[in-house]
Every structure is written in C-alpha cells, then in structure tokens.
Length: 186
Image (cartoon, rainbow, N blue to C red; front, side, top):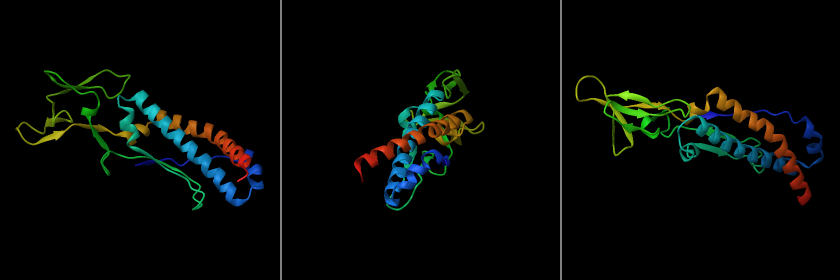
C-alpha cells in the first residue's frame, strides 16, 4: 500500500483563515483537501494509464481516498493505492493484453515498449491467468506475475506528476473553498 503525505505552505491564505471562526476554518480546509485529493486520484489514474497498458477501471478500483472531515477535526486526506489482493504486490500478466502464440504468450506492460514474449507460457483459467511450468516436469505450474498499481504509482515520473498536481491545485482549491463558504455565510 502506498500513501502520500504532502505538506503545503499556507502563509498566503493563513491571514484570511485566522479571521474565520474555528468551525468554519476546519470546513474550508477539509473541503479544499478533499477536492485536491480527488483531483490527485484522477491524475494518478491518468498518469498510470498513459504509461502502462492497464485499464483506467483497474487503476480506479485499486485507489481510494479517505476523506478529510471537519466534524472529527481530521484535516488530512489519505490517497492510497493498494494491491488487488491485500498483502500481495504482483498482478498476473494476463491483464496486460496477453496473446497466445506458438512460442508462448506475448504481453505489453508499458505502452511505449513493444510486446514481450514469455516462452513456453500459456493462457489458462478461462483467459484470466498466464501460467508457466516450474521445472521440466508437468507439475508444478506457477502464474507469471508483474508489478501492480502501487508499484506503478511509485515510479518517479508518475509520483512526481501527482505531487506537482497536488502542490499546484491545493492553494487554488483552498481559495475557492474559502470564497464559497464565506459567501454562504456559514
């Protein structure tokens, strides 16, 4: 499981926030954090699907935003990327456009790279798993696995893009939430 911890410099908006009463200040901050976390999740999905040959729905089902709340004075949001199987860090290569050939199975993990062949492998389990023999005998067989969404997110280029998006959007969302909640007078 990968978690992001971003700290932002709020000096520009700090004076405006100091004038608000405590309850309203917490609501402004939590609204801005939640909006920024949702945008970060979308950016994470966009970056991963642009670099890896994986569907956006697969990435979306493996990321979660734990929302900030003004009621319990929780002023942080957690953006998590977790493996499909809890505790496991790998994903079967069948999900990466696997095709059966005479030599074995070809897969394309990265969009920029070509298809790679896995010799003597086959697609089984009704197309959900790529298998390989573990030795010369008929059995045992083992699934062929590669990285999962948390490791994809942890690549430097994707991680840096998401953090840059958070740093760019948080002050804007904080000002927007401040304006919206003070306009309503709540």
